[in-house]
Image (cartoon, rainbow, N blue to C red):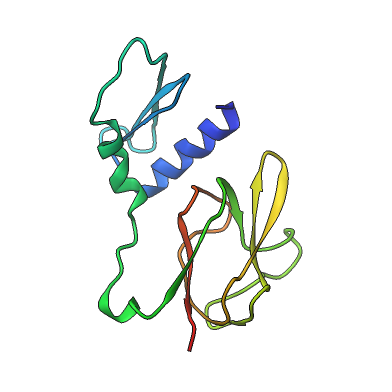
Length: 155
C-alpha cells in the first residue's frame, strides 16, 4: 500500500464520521482513529500482521462502507458503483463543467465522472439510461471499490 493510498483512506475516514477503522492486508495492518476529543486530528498506526491479528477488524470497517442504506422510495433506482479505488472527480479538469448534475438525463455509455488511480484518470461510463437522482460522493473525495456514486432513475 502506497503513502498516497493511505492518505486517501485517512481523508475518507475523517469525512465519513467513523471513530475507528481497521484495515488488514497481506503485508500491513492499519488502524485509523478519529474522535470528538481530537476534532480534526487523525491518529494513524501501522503494524506488521505478525504483531497483532484480530478477527473483529472487518466488522469495525463495515459501518464506514455501508453509508447509504436504501429506502422504499429508492428501491426502483439503479445505483452506479465505483469499479475501482481512487479519487472521484465530477469534472474532466478544473476549468471544465461537471459531467452530470442532479436531473441530468444520461444514456448508456455517457461519462459520469472520472476516478484517478495511480495518476491515471479513468472515465466512468454509465451502463444504464435514465435520470441522475442523487450524487452520493463529493468532488475530489476518495472512493472505494463498489462504493455507490450515483442513483439513477431508469424510467
